[in-house]
Length: 183
Image (cartoon, rainbow, N blue to C red; front, side, top):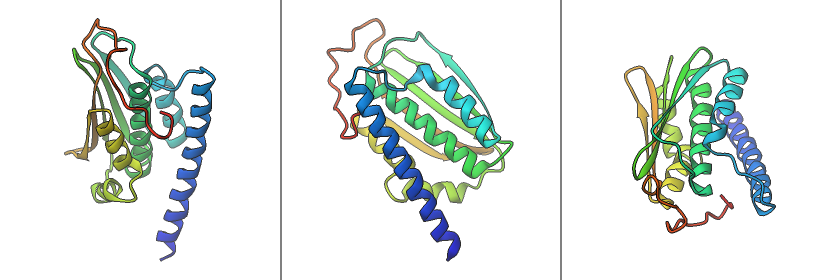
């Protein structure tokens, strides 16, 4: 159908745009520039909210500490994907509550949206093409973490937990894989 074709073209455009963004970030990393991470979540939420007509709020708990670039980027990209899905599926007027928790041995990111959610459309996004939330789940697993996502009573929630080394301990000794996209 025409709607399905338009959706596929839109997805391909988003993938190409995200691929170019990843390439720019990889080049920036090679030059020593900073990759996006938790420090930029407030701006991501503000920009997405303004562009998509949703509202979002970030709450940070625990003692913030330096994180490896792979962990920082995965936190950022997961929030970005979840907020994009909030805008797409819950629509204008939806609210996204974003919680970032620094625990003793891990960091947790929870994006919980509330609005006129279409849980079936979101579940399809979890099992489709290997991008979106499925890609984020694979990235989390490569880093030794987990990503779960699903409908709630009032919307949809995404929960990412990544190992982050013990609080107060240097992370240099923690072995993390370098992902193919340079992140």
